[in-house]
Image (cartoon, rainbow over all chains, first blue to last red; front, side, top):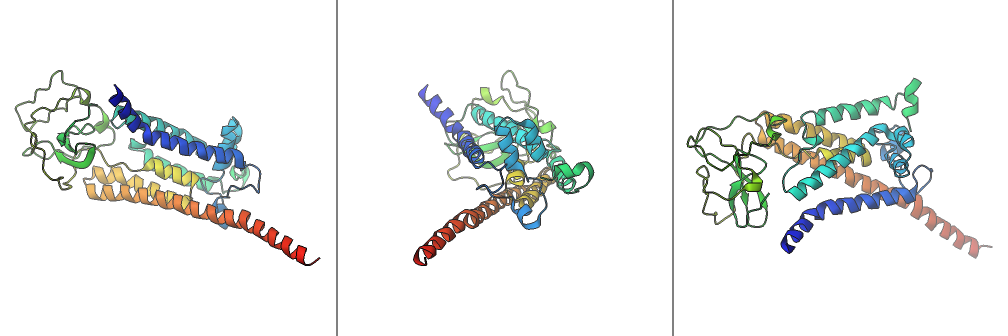
Length: 141
Length: 198
């Protein structure tokens, strides 16, 4: 009985560590408030150097909105990033279950088209949010 | 899955056509094909079909024909049997086996796509894109039978995702120093100058 408990504890070490790291990151975002300019959290280097939005720009503000339950704000800051958060949570849950079950659980990243679709989505998102005219101007954050 | 208790070659839970070496504590990366003399299984287009779990035989009874591949026994009901297909079923090798070729038809290596996505959105984007591009190559190379190239692409994806995170950490540190530490130091220096020069 106790060995089984030890075994489960050993398998859960990595998932708990990742969750703790994520919680630290969320706490930093909550306290740093990236939606107010001039805070302690750094601006994306791509934006700071080149003045353009990278696919990840607005992710910190998106997470801040998400932590405060503001889904529309999160969509506004980085819609694709919000989708990526969903994928990351999915992959985390599948991985954690796989650790517990002791086998590899099939998740989205094992799908044949996962990488090409993501690549196209990220590049398209990079272009679209920098177009700067018409309806696309709202995507620049 | 019941984990074996002693070192040896056991059926790979994630690959019905391969065996994996268990070193007594943990699963090692070393794998070998199950059937020694059987024809090489074609590299299964591993993307979707390879993930369907093998049917669980009601009792483990290896078929007499070595050319036909037996579905792997369900890992949860696994008891180390004398496997007629393995090279070394009962005697655990004295030394760790050399990293032999990957079992053809197995699963491709982890492409680290999750890390690549994480680094693209939250770290340094250009490196993250390189990581996604490398992760993209893994399954294609694997399907073509270029196992070493697939492994190299997977390693490369991991490397670039790490670079992305490291670059972001460096830039964040610089931003913190320039934006927070230097102004504080400057203010205190100015304050000192103002105090000495009334």
